[in-house]
Image 1 (spheres, one colour):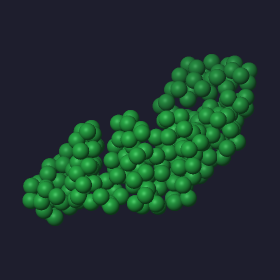
Image 2 (cartoon, rainbow, N blue to C red):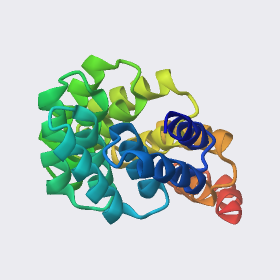
Image 3 (cartoon, rainbow, N blue to C red):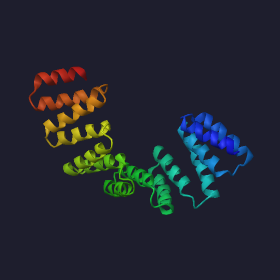
Image 4 (tube, rainbow, N blue to C red):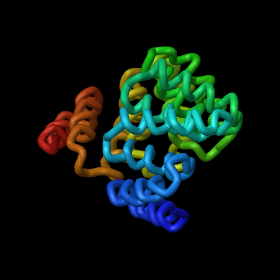
Length: 231
């Protein structure tokens, strides 16, 4: 069973969840309560969009190992992906109670709270995630979106800048900065960020459209026409 389990883990690393699932199922034929293989099975099922069955499998792991944080975490992430936000938060809270330094649990809980429009609570979760893992660009970025929702321009920009310091190819952060600056009437700054977004992803025509809007506001009408043609 160990060989089949490790084969499954290797296949997951190669992004081959269907093949991995077969290996985990093989290991479980030998030992139906093999927690590692059950976790692998659940993860594989989630990746091939069999999320309900993944949840059932995480529940079995929880029955076998009720004090193990990982099935609660992974179940919470899967529930979040399914749009079951309140259930996701409940599962993530259990993960946090068992392992208080799980930045991923705080990050996902923050995302669920943000989707539920509980932006201030979400910011608290993102801060916890950052306190645990200061290199979590996604937490800074999503916290910036929350601040932007409150029209806290400076706070939002600060968060987006922190995310870009970690990952300067995070095109969504340039786009978000551009939007916040545009809303604040700072069209030169907005234009600069849309240019940076285009440099990272020149195939996204929406960035050219937004660039054109900035140029129009700046009365750079010929440049705006060129940008709109690219959109």
